[in-house]
Length: 204
View 1 (cartoon, one colour):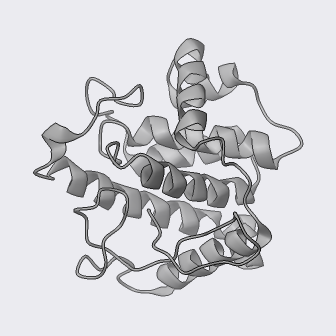
View 2 (spheres, helix red, strand yellow; view 1 turned 135 degrees about the vertical axis):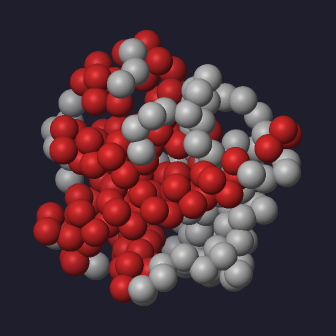
């Protein structure tokens, strides 16, 4: 889906991802099982004052990574929340998960990328914390970083479809893995352990 890789489409993609993550985070904030969720290195003591959209726009402005990185970061967030169901995205961890997922995606996808210290400055955290977040994120993914062309295209197709809808999120459909109590749009799951792709649910 070359459309989403077009730099001119990035503002729409960022706005959609921000809206989606905001709704997921707010839903998990009010989840009755919130007290049972683990506290991780991604959790801040307070909710950041910067909005998710402004934060993601800041990352896009200063990270200078390819458009594909944001799609891959989306894939990584999906995988992370599926593998770590006790760490659903909420208002206390979404910003750190975002900066970490984009940084890891840039390192994996792009030939040239900034170091951790730069991403830490962009994300408003220390380099030491950025290093810890990266390591924890990689272990949370099980170091499953490869994204096949088929998986990438499938995620792009889903995002493009949702972005075309006037009301992209319907909270009466199937549950997402990003907080299993959240009801939202149906997606697919990926299986890259074989040459065939299976239908699953998207975590984000």
